[in-house]
Length: 212
Image (cartoon, rainbow, N blue to C red; front, top):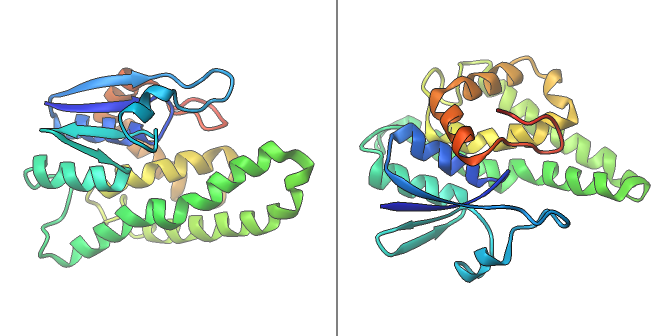
């Protein structure tokens, strides 16, 4: 059976959601954040050297990194669901979004979170970081003007992977500048599997209102 090591209010919510979308049997081990530092607990470091979540165990394999885990689960347990056929033109687009989420899009929003904690000391960084946020949100929005999901009208695991970028962006208030983004996030939140994942793993709250 699959075993997911899940840190509350973290990227691992995506893997929990993926497992629910595919209707897979899995064991969920939930870890709270340190109430003072908000960091992951040391128990995770005993499982993987980085001490990060998500971590997924499957038949003696231990997988880290959200994109790699999503790719593995879809290939080994998806039975053709949540991804285009590997020999299709859409598959390359799917892979692009799967990697873009963490490879490019998340960075300015993570920097924005840390910048906010610096107060006035972080002010010189704000114009550059805000510009990058708008750049990425504009790119995502332009794609969503063509369909309900990243691959047109077909929901895929790439949408699950990208969801956390918009969760991180939402507290900035910038989503309102791009008409497709909030409806897109609301469509994702309305999926029964997403709601089951929140019930099991807790809400996502990144500096704003919890998404239940």
